[in-house]
Image (cartoon, rainbow over all chains, first blue to last red; front, side, top):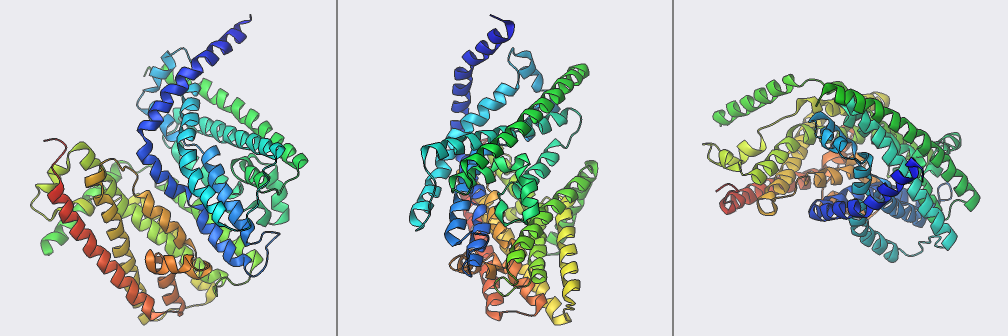
Length: 272
Length: 262
């Protein structure tokens, strides 16, 4: 057995315990997750306006019901793919607590992965219940629930979460050198919301821009999973766009790794 | 009264002094506000690329509402949220005692104590958008309109202050609600665009039940000369009632409070 395989197996063995620990932690903080509901409801604002506009006729193939379906799914998808780890990394770096993680024999990234994954398990049911209720009481909402399509949806969500996580991990790594990494990440989130279909479906952008946005990874955060679920992408196109996002994720993960290596080196040099 | 005004100016000066110690991120906050404004305006551009008017509002008229949203958000971020955060923190750690033993009205001391002037960035962005939109519209509001506009903005300030104070006061009972202010900010999102752009029942909801329309849409109507007097009256009555409610609730909370430390 090679060194790397052994290393990987060891990490895999650690994961159940790690996930369990962070699951307990997520449960302790569940009260604050209620506030998440208000945040999560944000797409309803844009949904209402578009529904109002669509009463004068469908816009780019989107009727009132289609807007309802799009934004309701978007609420759920955002909770699956969205994560905020930059501020936490920033605090750990600033007050030196990161050294505790660095001393442990496991790469610090795994703690963040465990926290994000378990947080999802708490948040998704809280948000899914009202979303599903909303879908049931809105007549005419149609989702493509064929098994193949659900698999594509899951893949798109996974790649969206991976993009969000790696990008934020890279941005968090900037806090080894700057004090305002959370500001950069807030700017990133704003750009992502607008360019990734969270605020307005990509189909309503000018055609030339749409092509550009489909080549960027932001779509993985909301637009791509939602378009798959609402049956607006052919399977071939969906696979192609998932692969585009995956390629971005690999590149960003590589960048994050470089940033963290250099950062950790300079961090220990400070002697915190 | 003059005692309280003196106290207020002291609070403001003190907040400024603290702020000057950490004056790094004004530029960062300005960039953030500009980005936020970009998507807000970008959303409007997309609306208007598919429709020429929305709920009877033209693009430039909608810009006035967007500008007012940034004024309201900036006010909340600058003057209200820091205090609410402090209240929640005081209650959680037990230091609220030190506020309550001061020989001034405890609500004044707890809710008007801290300001983050760096957040003025949002106000600047909002004002710039409004001025730009009015210039595009070649609209020059008269003195009467401007007076009424100020009265309305004051009403919006009272409304936001009272709503936030009520939420903050709830932490006397609920203790760990660290980001409860997100509630107001979340609702305020509906003020980014004119209330007429929303279909019923949402429009009625944000006009009467949670009168966000009063904060951004109604002041915009005044400067654009498309005012509905009933809404002005209704909004101010609502704001006054909420202010009264916040005072009553604060008193009840303080009576109920028996400190985390003792």
